[in-house]
Length: 340
Image (tube, rainbow, N blue to C red; front, side):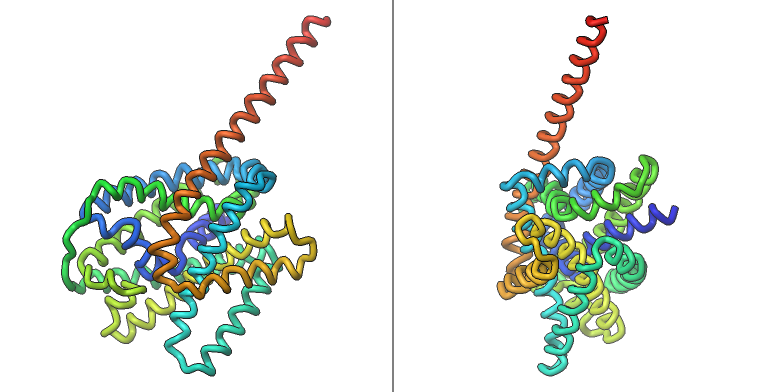
């Protein structure tokens, strides 16, 4: 059971980044589509279950195929850098609440911690998530329950059917980024454990997306903020601090998973391990200058489309390869029988 919990923490910790925990990502992909957003959240959660299960069971083959394809390798690397940049941008926004001296000290500490976790690989990542994700889950739940008692203004619904496209885009974005994390985690799980990890992850995702969506729908004036949930609880000091911690922890858990992914892709091009790790950190950090809100509202949907292409192409090619291998085995067996 401990293996199931570890992989669940790893999956949820990868998904709950700055965009999710701040509410910005939820607004972009769900809340702005009105009451239909609850249906889209359910669809996204179901898709996430199947996607997580598939990657936990067969992700190692898919990740190997992606690594061996220059096009897919480039696309996943680019998406990971964009997503990592949003985590760095989110952390910068949070650290900007402090004076300049403390801001730079915290940024230096962030780079050092990122380097240590990345160089330790998946083992370090699992340990960090096993500690941070349960704490994140409890605090986040407390914040959104409290925020649910607050009301601002309702926003007129957008063209709801447009949201049909965003549910699979949301899943594709997260899964295409987590392919290495999921595939490595899946190696330690049997079929039942992979099923339970995927199920628990999908249920937790559904609960938190639904609650977040409810809170955001009640306070649609927060849509203009870069961090909507933080904006909603801004007048309540204790809850503001809790949400601040939630977003910060969410940034860390997702950022570390992304740096692990970027580092794995860069190893194909950079042989020196230290230079590879430094590059994995520097590239998203440099892109983060674009800005937190701009990355989520503009670059995330674009990256999601590429994410669908990556997943579908990898799965199709993997199944095609397996069918060819299976056909060759049948032919070999048939020829052996005739020889006898």
